[in-house]
Length: 178
Image 1 (cartoon, rainbow, N blue to C red):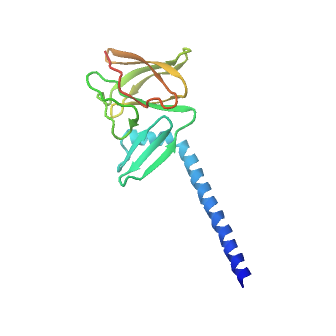
Image 2 (tube, one colour):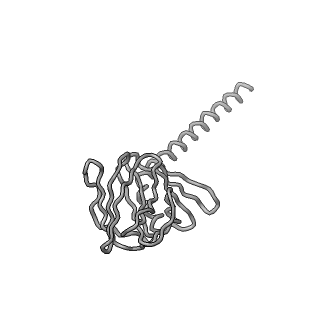
Image 3 (tube, rainbow, N blue to C red):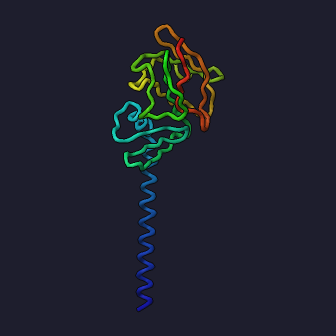
């Protein structure tokens, strides 16, 4: 009788462990598939189309916080770096880690001429980009590089350098148009 119970318990454990691996595997697959849509998710938070959650973005992950304080993290693409830039004329705020749902820039829904090249002279961005209603311009740049950036609006311009290395700032609020 004891042998039958031990066999039944052993079988139940094998089934349980198999189930847990399957669930964990499907969750990992879901997160991997979700990473394909990470840019869309970041964009949704940035334009304010997600309610009842806050979101911030570091150099390596998107962190979403529910109203109850629970958090979910999403890995960013290994080859792309997210940076959000709020050019300003008169007022700004200090920032390093961008809050997609909290940071507010001065120049909302404005069109900017954005030019970015790497230090070798390769043009990465050369286009007109409209800032979101939060006053920020969101960009995905290749990782592990330093860039020269020029932003112009209404006859005013700012030039600077930014970089996309691990632990670099994802929120740039220091570019004053003059």
